[in-house]
Length: 529
Image (cartoon, rainbow, N blue to C red; front, top):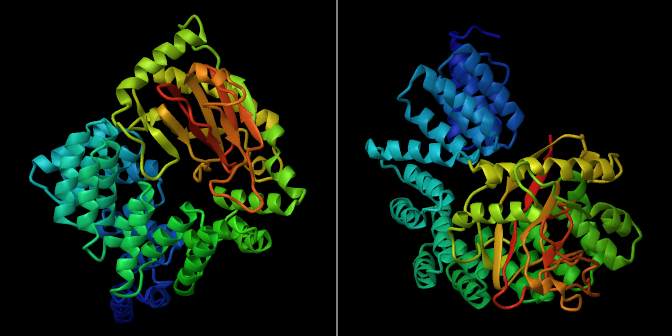
C-alpha cells in the first residue's frame, strides 16, 4: 500500500470523494478499501453507512479517529451513525469526548443533548438545546429538538410554538408529524386539519398528510388526498402506504391487496408494504399466500415481532398445529402480583401514591395518532427517566415478576421468546395510559419489545361483569378482520396490583370500558440484556 502522502493515495481519496458525493457508494468503497488514511477511512465509513453496513461504517470511522484524534468530520459521522443505531450511551460518550477537547463545540453540545433526550434525561437535554438557541444558534433542527424535549416535559404549548417555527423554516416530515401529533393530542382538531390542509399542497409533505388523516380515523380524507396525488404524477411510497392502510382500516381486503401489489411493483422490498399485503391476504382467507410471504421475512429478521404475529395468524387460519406451539397462551401469558414496595402498607396504598405521581405526567387530552390507544391519554415521557421516588419504586418492584417470568417460560432455541432468554434484561420503555369515556386499545403488538406487559394502577368497577368484560385485556385477535374470523382466545380481568406479562409478538388489545369509567395502567417493554 502506498504511503499516506503518495500521489496514488491522494488520487484515490479524490476519486472516492467524488463517488461519495455522486451517490455511487459502492464505487467509493471499492476505491478506498485497504487505504489506511484518515480521510480515506472517513469516506469509506460514510459510504458504508449509506449502504446500511453499520459494522463496516463504525470500524472505518473509529480507525480514522484512531489515526487522527479530533478529526471533526469523522466524529460527526460516527455520532450520526450511533444516533441512527439508537446507541445512546455510546453516542453520549463520543460527544462527551468532543466536549472535553472543545467545550464550545456546537456539534458536541447538540449531539450530547440528543443522546440525553433519548436516554430520558429530558431536563438536561432541554437546558442544552435552550442554551444553544439563546446563544443565537436558531437552526430549525435545534428548535425541533427543543420542542421534542418540551413535549417530553409536558410543556405542550411551548413545544407547539417551537414546532410551528421549525416547520416554517424547514418543512420536513419529522416536523410535520411532531406538530400534527401535538395538536391532535391537545384536541386542537381545527388547527390539526388546517395544518394538514396546508401540508397537502406541498408535494414532499402531502403523502404524510394523507397518512396522518388516516391515523386520525378519517379514511375518506386520506383516500381523497392520495387520489389527488395520482393526478399530478406517480405516487411516492408514503402515499402508497397511506392508501393501502386506509383500505385495511375499512376492511376492504381486495382493494388493499390491489393497492399493495401496485406499490410492490415500484418498491418490491419495502417492509411496510409487504406487511400490509400480508394483512390483506389474511383478511381474504389467503393464508397460504400470506405464510409464503412472511416466512422469508421471519428468516431474514427473526426478532421482528410483527413477522412472528403474521406467521401465527396464518398458521391459525390454516389450522396448523404449529400455531399452538408458537402462541402457547397458557405458558406464555402469565399473571403476577407486584410486590409491595418498601415504605407502603399495601398495594392499594402504593397504587394511590403511584397514580398521584403519574397524574401530572398526563399532559395531553387525547390519544396519540400512531398507537393503539383510543379515547384516553398517555404520559408524555418514558417513566424510566422520571426522577420521582414513587415511580422509581415501581420500576424497582418490577424486577421480581420479570425474573420470575423468565424463569418460568425458560430458555431454548426452538421458540422466538425462549431463544432470547439470557436470564438478564433491561426495561426498554415504560409509560402510563389513562382510559376514560369508552376508551380501549385496538389489537396490536410491540415491535421493539421482547416481553410486554400490563400493570393495573386503577381499575373501574365495570370489570366485575364477566359477560361484558369491560376493560379486560384480550389476546390472539388481529387488528383486522380475517377469513375465517380470529376472535380473542384469552381474556384476563384487571385487578389493582396485577402484572400481566406476555410475548411482545402476541396480538393483544382491550375491551372498551364503560362511559365515565377510569382505567389506569403502567405498561413496559423488556428486552434481553
